[in-house]
Figure 1 (tube, helix red, strand yellow):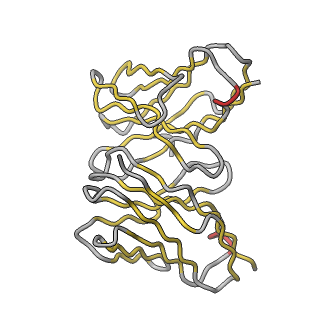
Figure 2 (cartoon, chains in turn red, cyan):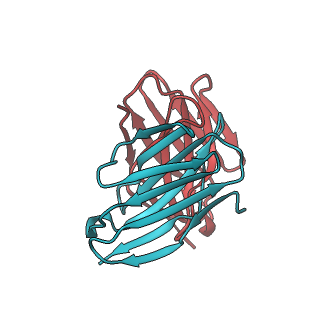
Length: 112
Length: 110
């Protein structure tokens, strides 16, 4: 089955700096890679996703890159703000809507 | 938005008790999922269902059972709860689009 590893487990940055979270996956059949943000006590919420036919996707301050050959994908947050502080999860699946395999999560702390 | 509703939101129970967590959705999706979240372990899949007649075990199904009563309802049961099942449980739906999660049930087993 699929295995997703996520690094780092915690990340502390100064407000305005960039943050990068990296994930690797094992199953070459996986073709859909969402990123979820989870604030304390709340549900995971999708912030961006990428499909394997695309190498990069950007939405304002958030971008995701995918390297299919190396089986890794990364989340990039620029100009971080205190409200970006949360736990971020990467995941992988075969097609959107199918069962997800999640990474272990990254706790991002943005210091004012 | 309340399109995936989980009940109860919090529950404290004792070892050995039977407990049911319920999930209902108004998104009209056939596919529903139950995940468990533990600190540092992300979310792990317990069971999933692709339609009313289709139930499948996930990564960590031991000690759990499910029932898909209707397209909109998918329940998770702990037949005899044990303390290491203390966790945050999420229901999710998805249909050719990103999975959408409920607000979760925080379950504590004493």
